[in-house]
Length: 321
Image 1 (spheres, rainbow, N blue to C red):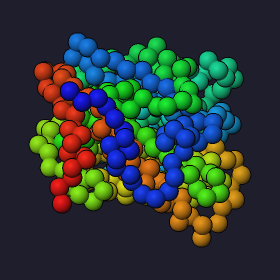
Image 2 (cartoon, helix red, strand yellow; image 1 turned 120 degrees about the horizontal axis):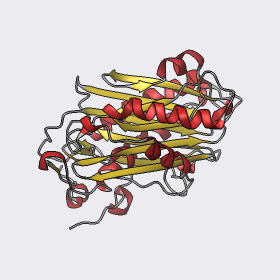
Image 3 (cartoon, rainbow, N blue to C red; image 1 turned 180 degrees about the vertical axis):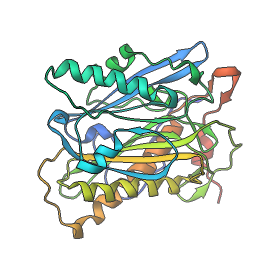
């Protein structure tokens, strides 16, 4: 039995930019993450909440869609206005709307005068390992994820919205990573990995038996404190989806591949000519976060006795040429 370990602990170093102190999305100042995990009785699912400080006053944001076979509640208003005005939540496909409703209740409780709110909720299909038709996410589960959000190290692998997900032939889940720029600013990402393809580590394939899963998708949340506007954040979000190809995604036709990027900096002031380093930061972070989602996961048996196996770490370390 192997213990979950991040890819850097296995000697796999992605890219050249330095990481933040936690190598996590929470390295971005003012960004917190909370999760609720639900397991047992045929269930492997949950909620992951990304809670930036200042969301109630809106933050610049953008959405990128690689393949739109999925649900990202609230995305059209983000596209239209270029801001988010709520935390961002992730869950399993058929629980999306229950989570959005519970988030709305949480928001209304905090603003008794609100008459219009735009909850942002994304999903991937965890029906391979969880009885997805039961839609087990309760308002209490959603509120717990929001209320316990912290700026500490994010639990990866079989946690929150990643409890029942699989990717690249193995058990996957939540992953996170970050990079810092020479000017001391940070790009951090969190992924909910649940997509098909051939696992590739630093350009080398890792053969795997494919999992016959019902859903193939990936949700990517990109946070930064760089003073970017919504157009520039859209460019960052597109690079996040590009980075899925680095780990072997086949971008299957049944996959919903989305990225949402936001900044905690309220006043945009960043020249396009200087975007090379942020682009590098987001692609490196997404690549490493996706690998972490795999190496931090545990072998899981769930609904209808289906099993998804954790990737053997020796395959990661001893990659074939």
